[in-house]
Every structure is written in structure tokens, then in C-alpha cells.
Length: 110
Image (cartoon, rainbow, N blue to C red; front, side, top):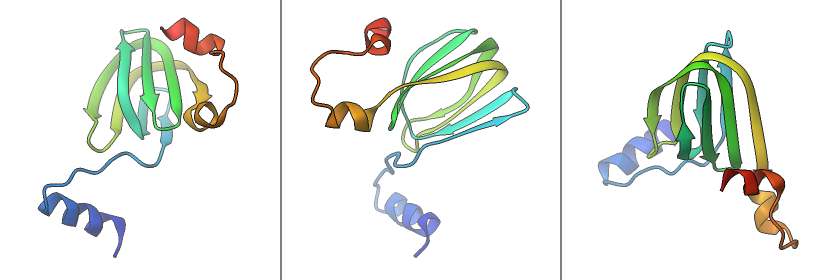
């Protein structure tokens, strides 16, 4: 059974789909589509900080506007002029890491 049919079947039973994959798609530096979004930590028209299933993601640019946010599916869409995207430490690395100190990026986002 393909993923679309499984998702429809879960929806029929009242189940929600959790974000399992992550993808970042940029079109002409003006449209950004992201999957695997768990939480929006902060946003304004110049910076958006997201928590994805693979760690923190910071989008920077001008006139950034959130067009779609669906935390049940993990889908997120933003428009504006994107100047940079930057990932923080991977959630996988943090969970498997044996160091107790926090990274610089984590301390800055507190």
C-alpha cells in the first residue's frame, strides 16, 4: 500500500501522521517549502527559527511571511527573499552524543 493510501487510512481512523522525513525546497529564493517541521520557535520578517525532526533550522531573509504551517503533517511554507538557511546540531547527534555541554548554537537560541 503506498504512503498516500496509508495516510488516508489513518485519517479515516482518526489518527494523525507524525512528521518522519525532512526536505527543504527553495524555489527562486522566494518560496521555501519544508517537511518534517515540529515547532516554530520564533519568527519575524527577517528570521524564522524552526525545530525539525533533524534539529534546528534558521531561515534568514527579507519580507519573510509564513504561508502554511501544518504541524500534524509537518509541512511549512514561507515566501519572501531568502538570504540564508542554517542548520543547528542534528537531533540524532545530540541524542547519541556523550558530551554533556551544549553547543554554541543551542545556547544562542535559549
